[in-house]
Length: 279
Figure 1: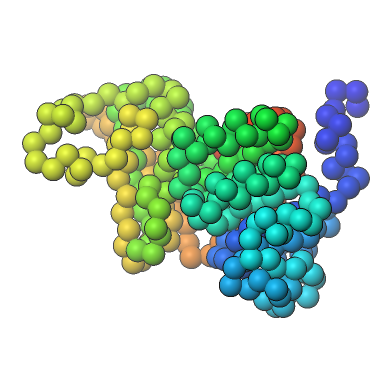
Figure 2: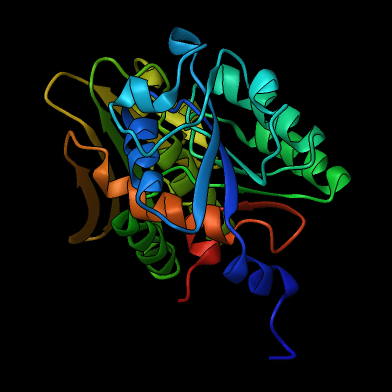
């Protein structure tokens, strides 16, 4: 008992008050409905510009949700809360996170498309506020496994490229999952390349974006929901690791609940759901 964190003990006997931005969106609404059935998390405020002024329960037809909906995170954060979770857009998420840290909340980032520079700013703000930000590009448990398997493979297989698939409506490219995967692989080592980019004949852009040395290719077409693939190559053989998600947001709910419960045990930024999982 003496070695357990005080925050862990406190959360066993207290309800976590959650403020959710993007609560009426595709992923946010699925999470909100799950929170309604979760005894240890209470949704106390929601952010949605299109439904501001209403009750979230009315918007989602879920009578167990009584959180008011606000048009901005700043307004929603006037209500006392413990954790702020952002499911919005990259241009909105960064100021939302900064505002939540200024108000003294721990933060979970579910929004994709934030850059390494954004995360450096977030880390500095979290340290200054004495709070934690847990950034999760993808809450699906199989994606966490893909990232872990890919890091292991990169120690033995010297060359790889990443392919990021999504529907034609996804505005950010690469996806947060692909960005996080590239970030993790770059921490293992830079990939070996054949022809250097500057020696490429034709359109260099055809070789994809450079993220931490990894080449990343984003495909945006009807028929895709969200998929991430990393292909490792060696002479005479290759290894492909891929995750495919369907049209439902349900695969992301369990990971999001885990992140809400786990955030707050350290100060600063942590990236990836695996940081709070038992591997």
